[in-house]
Length: 272
Image 1 (cartoon, one colour):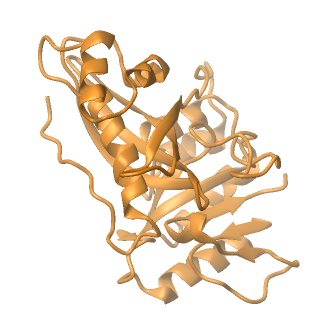
Image 2 (tube, helix red, strand yellow):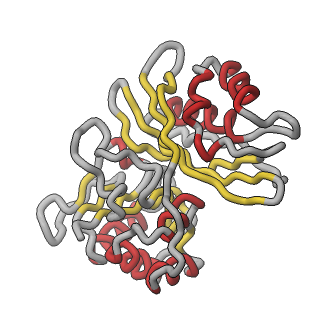
Image 3 (tube, one colour):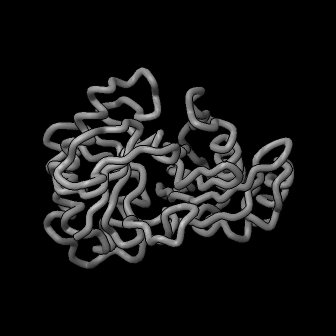
């Protein structure tokens, strides 16, 4: 089993504590030493964190049947953050004996004392892979400048991603090395805190948490790099580009936006 490291939030995040709580819960469920597999022992690990053991019943692919498991959190990104509630998308890789995989978990939380309370888990459900993957999807999967976590890879293999998304990824990869966090599965169905459908579950958006090796959330990351990426995403056809910067201009009204949810990633959405 590979060695892993505990994930920690950036100190300049909007609310580091909410991400840390979500990640701790995922790490507790998704990693265990030999002989400690199964729901019963996972519930004891979750209870030791002061969280509800019943959350384990919602773990899905995060709790495979295996004697041991190692888990590495790649990123924890906001699916949404409001004053008293949050969605944290925990992107992870997971290894069990003879198998390497991973998933993305939409962890829901509510503000409480002394810490945020995890209220629900929504694991990614990418769907089955196509027997024959379209050409653009094959190109994306093969491009070393498009770094995809397991759930995002499965999304693309499923054939449920709109061609406009795939074309934009390939175009942007001509200039940048992109580390993608979420494409379709593992994201809230609606824009968090609203009843407006998100573009992600429809296969019409992707999120980028790192550009050319620099985390979007890191205040040390060049503003010029993030702005350039956001503007190039718009030029690649995105009608809705969100990120940590408030940009002017655009080919259409409100093409660019920013808010606390997009403090840690760039959202690239498509109408068709």
